[in-house]
Image (cartoon, rainbow, N blue to C red; front, side, top):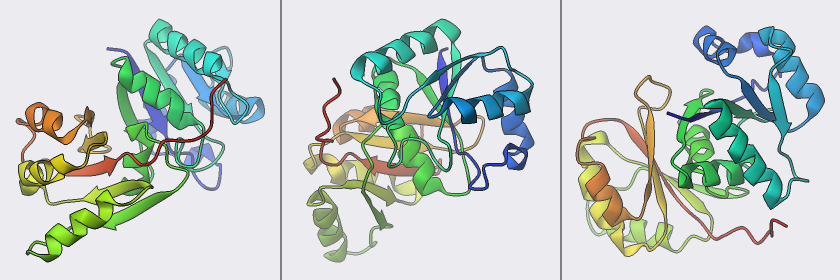
Length: 228
């Protein structure tokens, strides 16, 4: 299955700080997608993969560049996207490529840093120049209903945490929000998976995912930037 890995670059920009399991995964990838050529080369030298194919995706990229990158991902079957520092796709142009990859059925897998919040955002493919972290909803009414109404009114992309055993309940409650939702299960584990759709669609898709830890991302207002 074609897979796009989403790598969180250490804030120190020192690749030897990456976990060993991530380094082993990166050594088996043949396409590297980064912001700047110099930084991409640094990663390739660290991995001893100087001859690997790479492509730049940054603030200067146009829609044709994203579509070309998507074609290369399918050609190579295993690719990684990363930023010069931190998490790609969070306040970063990489989100557009991840969104397109999701829509074409590419398997999106995180190579995360320590934060499940930014990791879930990075693999969602949703615009996240700004986002709102809502935390956990209250267990009791009417506080819970007010909480959900508040996040529905948000223009930003929203990150929502919830207890694993409440998956069906929260998806039923979110059906009144007519926006795309991303749910990432078991982030950082071998069976990690991210599913997207409206809440009603996700109720069907996630019937076998009860009791797995997850993070929900609700798409915010569309980016006004036009990809030319």
